Amino acid sequence: MPLLRQLIRPLRRAWTRVNEAWLNIDTVPAMGAWSHARDGQAEAIAGARTDAAQFDDNMRYESPDYWYVRKACRDAWHGRRNAREIAYDLGSGMGRVLCVLALRPWAKVVGVELFADLAASSRQNAAAMRGRRAPIEVITGDALQQDLGDGTVFFLFNPFGAKTLAGVLARIDASLRTNPRHVQFLYYNAEHDQVVADSGLFERWHHFQTRNGVPVSYWRTR
Ligand SMILES: C[S@@+](CC[C@H](N)C(=O)[O-])C[C@H]1O[C@@H](n2cnc3c(N)ncnc32)[C@H](O)[C@@H]1O
Image 1: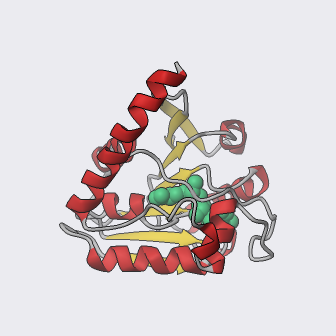
Image 2 (image 1 turned 135 degrees about the vertical axis):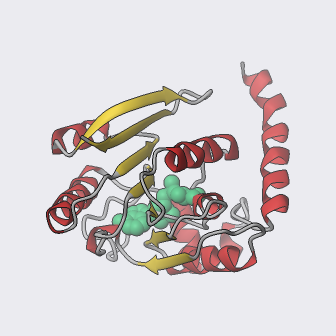
């Protein structure tokens, strides 16, 4: 198994490079060179605690494989109900998911990222990307403290712990009372799926595991 992994690793790296060259973006932090990364990036890559997160439960920056990013973005697009839908990536890192989402004509694609350096990288990627068909906006800050009331799709790659997740779900719930709408919630590396279930907001209509056993779950308003 470790041998197989060693063989697959360079292929995976090449696959990432091909996707990034095609999109004209760079979402791979300089690994092994954290000391050279700017402060915010180095902290985000290490998953350092920060006062900027109300519950101090932020996860480290890493990005899902393009195969699964493309699949999730395609599925979200097929699950939409109208042409005015706005897709969010909560914990948008360097913008990989944002850029793949923006290959389709959403009304808008919005990223929320805690660390200013990562948010700046994602803005650069958004400006440089090839094939963009939706405007991309990136907000620097805690997802828990944002107005999410216009979002119809929420993509999360396990960005934070149960407390922030519960708070975000409560915000979406409150927004549904003032702006009733169909919402999709895509949770990659769904470590706190039970929190989503307990919110009573969504039904889980699909789930699968990646080749590496990472759980991915798809939720939507009933
Ligand atoms: C696993 S990465 C997600 C990668 C990203 N979705 C992509 O397209 O590559 C998690 C990200 O969530 C960010 N994050 C963690 N807690 C957050 C919070 N409370 N609000 C906003 N972003 C947060 C981290 O800084 C990190 O960049």
